[in-house]
Length: 182
Length: 218
Image 1 (cartoon, rainbow over the protein chains, first blue to last red):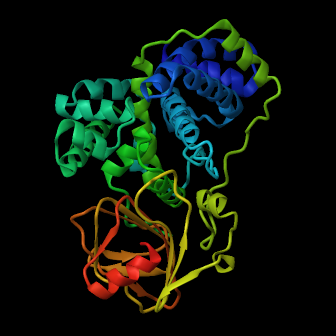
Image 2 (image 1 turned 180 degrees about the vertical axis):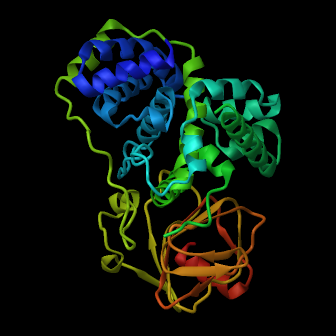
Image 3 (image 1 turned 135 degrees about the vertical axis):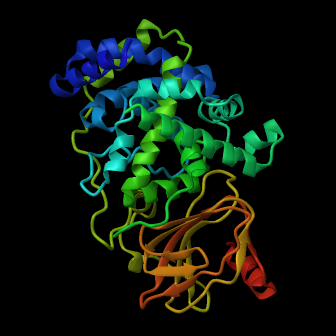
């Protein structure tokens, strides 16, 4: 399902508490959220539990989603990531990590910042195809397999500094591509 | 407040992926509350996750699972108002306030750790390595020369300090790694309060500092 359709559905959920629209969002997102959680190392049962929590959060927070700030998939990813971190430290004195990343636009931001926040998911997709293989491996290890910088360094038998500099390069390349595509 | 020192892009990348240890994640969150520029950059990093989420293999989700969520949304309380951002100059970032269960630096139980230095250790996650806590350093004092075993993030919440990398005031973050050695000196006439987290012990250059380190656990 494309981003425009998904964005329209979330708007219906936010404005009208439209259960039917939410049902459609559930069908589109739940299988991928569950897939992401499994890849991050959660077992079948935990992935199912956390997926349900993520989808519930999407209903609860639909009114906070602002398409001018980024894509729906990026927003859903953030909720999924925070939920999986919170799950990992469930027994600890908890602090919700799900704060502030999505509050409304701030007047003090420069136009350069706004260019970035308007980044469309589509632009990033094409940017990702231009990232060299050695950087793409690191993107996938971090974002999909939940590996830290030092874990990536030891798996790839690279110095930590090299992993960090490849992260910087990958990030800079994607930023540039987004900006050129505006 | 203008923030002049920002997060390293490699740190934002790791934060976006959700792979920073808990203490460093809290530091990044606290900085994001004070820094619109890094907040935008963090959204951009999440977009990478969004693209990968879109490409993700779909795992079967049962009808009973959907029914369970549809039932839960019937009773859920909706969030229609965003979390209030930090606006006042002396306000504590939300993420820190929720950890400390207190909003006022003065009423915290500071532990004296040396001349002009007080510390509050914060609870880390599991067996997470390194130091996580608040430091309060009195005006004119300096921290002994030190380097870092791994990544160290220092966020200024009150007052200011200076080192070879420049002047760090409220909202500024020093994102350092093992190659950086510095000697921060507190400037101005108020104590400097910093939130500090690292993922390996601090390496002090002098033996007296190393001796003190054993007692305060930085």
